Length: 177
Image (cartoon, rainbow, N blue to C red; front, side, top):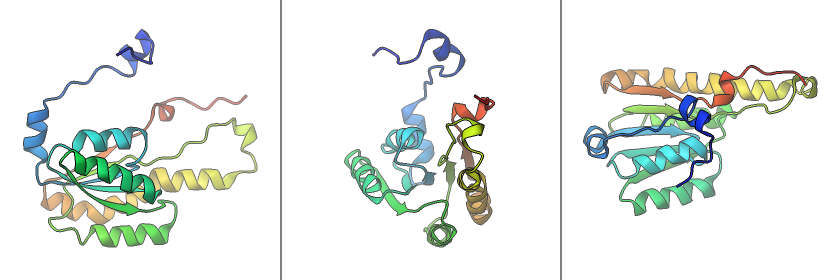
């Protein structure tokens, strides 16, 4: 399959990743893995890759229909998934999500914090849009921290892990137009 990226992009930003599927299955079987932003991009790809590991995937995203569709794919691949339709900007919904996560039998073993929002326009076109920055900070920083603070005791007990994911845009300085 031909890569959609140039040779330079592949070498610098997207090097090929190889992993041992059997070892991954051995390590993750029976683990509870919480994934935010599970229905799009990196989150969906991770979900599909982990579907065959025997892990219980706890999938979080805004759109219930997309969550249901991904859950069907996970189950078709032999995996199991719980879904939570949650807008991570809405703190009431986040509190409900956290209370449900805390009830999960065995606790959380891995938290993949992937949900994110970026602003894709010039700063000059954002001067009257402070609410966009507030939403971005909430989804990209405050909410993941809130979730982490709630589940760290579980992660410690389970010798768990936190994986924070950011897109390449986070590495590029914004440039005014």
